[in-house]
Structures are given as C-alpha cells and as structure tokens.
Length: 146
Image (cartoon, rainbow, N blue to C red; front, side, top):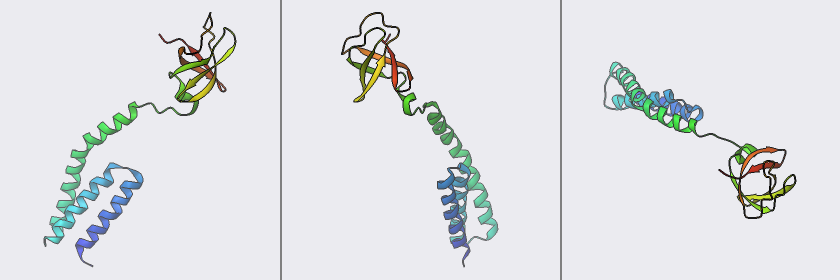
C-alpha cells in the first residue's frame, strides 16, 4: 500500500470522528492529513509529510479557532426552551373573556389554552392581547403587556 493512501484513510477516519463528535481537533488533523497526502503524492519523503501534517494541523487550529468560538457563542446565547417553558413570555389573544377569579381561553400560534389572570381587576374581553407569565399544569397565567 502506498503512503498517500494511508494518509487518505487517516483523513477519512478523522473526518468521520469529526462528524460524530464535532470536536474541532479532528477537523484540524484531517486538514493536516490531507496536506501530508499531497506531499506524498508529490514524491516528498516521510519527514516532509510529517512536517506538513504538523504545520497544517496547527495552522488549521489557529485559523478555525476564532470561527468556532464565534459560532459556539452564538449558539450558547440562544435560550433553548421547550415544552411549557417555551410559552413563557409569549403573546396570546384572548378568545373567551377572562373574568376576575375565573378561567378564560386564549390562543397562541393556533393552540387554544385555558388561562387565568389573577392580577386583573376587571374582565379581559375577547381580542385582548396578553402575555404568558407562568403556568400551573396546563393552565397559563397571563397579564396585560406593559
């Protein structure tokens, strides 16, 4: 087996590791292995291939690190809420009036929910826009937006 095929296999394995683990180091080593494979195809000896592997892997790490940090910071700042927590802070439209101390109904994205407005001192008529502040089981607590 020729040396360049070994480098190609190493690059393929490292790329699979990168896809499975999403670790930046595997991508950098893949780039280095492809550089070493190019050196092998050009007929350079193993010392040049090792130097190319080391230099290109290091250069890829230095070059890609700021990009990965920027991308990772962007994904960290997005608050990923699911289930009932995703409704907190959302705006809803009252579909059945909410009387003080009683339940009414409101619509959020086409879904109809039971709601209560404990802070309301007067009836909130249908069509009123409210904001979800909390929930208890499947009953949402709402208030008028600021």
